Length: 122
Image (cartoon, rainbow, N blue to C red):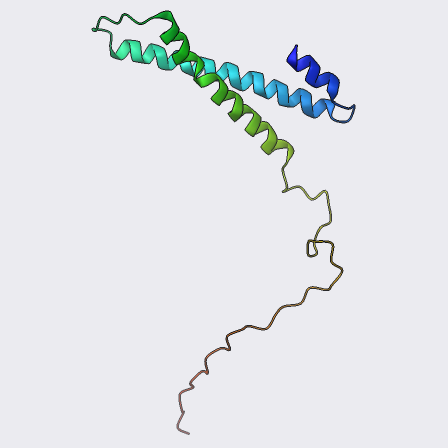
């Protein structure tokens, strides 16, 4: 229901971006749950000889804590894909800030030390 509201609130040009965002959020959350389940089974296997009387709530909390982290990782991966600045789409070779001033190399604030040349006997 919440995702449908998000999709309905987006414009036509934003819809593919929002759809990819939500797909990566769900995929990351489910991968996070999978990692949490694997971690839980590894903990149970490591302490297999102990009598563990864990409540169901503890088991669920152990698995669910990885879900939101996985969702954030999925969203971060998606955002890094759509904000790739290495493409040459725009011709921004000049200085930023909207200035029209030509860029020139500035003179160094510290002059170079004098070079000593060896005297050659001729």
